[in-house]
Image (cartoon, helix red, strand yellow):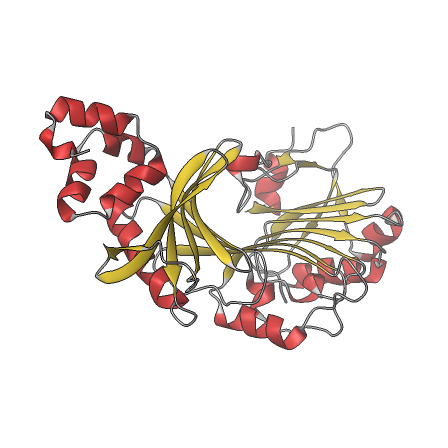
Length: 359
C-alpha cells in the first residue's frame, strides 16, 4: 500500500487505526514518513505517552509503553541469529540496523538485531531516535531484571533494578559481578529485590545504598546493611528475623544528624517476631503527643510505582502519637510500632511547626 497516494484525510484515518508498534516501525521507513506521522493527528496519541521503558532481561530487551494493567511493546531487541536470513535494513539515527517482524500474542511488532558486541551502540541509536521522536517530556526507564549487563548511561534515563535472587540454596549472589554491575550503572532510582543468599557484606560506599527507593526481602538486616548505610529517600524492608538493636541504632543515627539526611519514609516488616515497642521507644528517647489530641498523618508520593500493575502510588500512612526530633535542625519524624511493623516518617517541619498541626 502506497500511503502517500491517498488524500490527507484518508492517510490520517489509516494511521488512526494503526498500532503504536506499527506507527513506530513506519517512522523508520523514511524521513518523509516520519514527518507525516509527527505532523499528523497521530501526535495527539503520542502526546498521551509520558513514559517509555526498556525492559531488559537476560537475552532480550523490550521497548514498551506502559498503560493501565499492561505494557504495549513497540520494539524487541535481541542478538542477531546468523542462521536466519529474513532481515531487512532500516536507518535508525544514522545507524543501519537489521530488522524483522515478530508475531506474538496475536500482534505483530518489529525486532531489531545487534551483533554480539553491538548491543551498546544499537541501544544508543534507538534511544536517540526515541528522544527525537517523543521529545524530552517523556520519562525513560531502564528496568534491569538481572545483573549480567550494566545499565547504559543514556540521556534522560532513569535506572531500576528488579532482582529475585537466591530462591534456592545453590543460587548465591556473585558479589564481584553484582558490585561491578552496580558501580558501572547509573545511580538507581529504585531497587525492588529479594536477595536471600548474600555471601558477604557490600561495601559501605556501594551505589546500591544510594538508590532513591529500596524495597527488599532479606533473611536478616545486615546483608545488605540498608539500615546502616542507606542514603536514599524511601525504603520498605522485609526481614525474616528481627534485630531490635539495628532499629535503635538507625533512629539514633538519624536523631544525631550523623546519617540518613535525605530519608523521607522507612517501613520494616518483620515476619518472625514482633518489635518490642516499649524497649525501642525508651532507647530512642521518643516523645509523645497528648492522647486527647489527634496526631497528623504522614503520607508521601512513592518515588516509583508501576502504573501498569496498579501498585500503590503513595507510602503507607503513619498516624502516631510518638515522634523523635533531630538535634541538628529540630526536624520531626513520626515513629510507629505495631507488632512486627516499624514505620518511620520524616516531616518537613520543625518540632514547633509539627505540634501546631496536631489537632
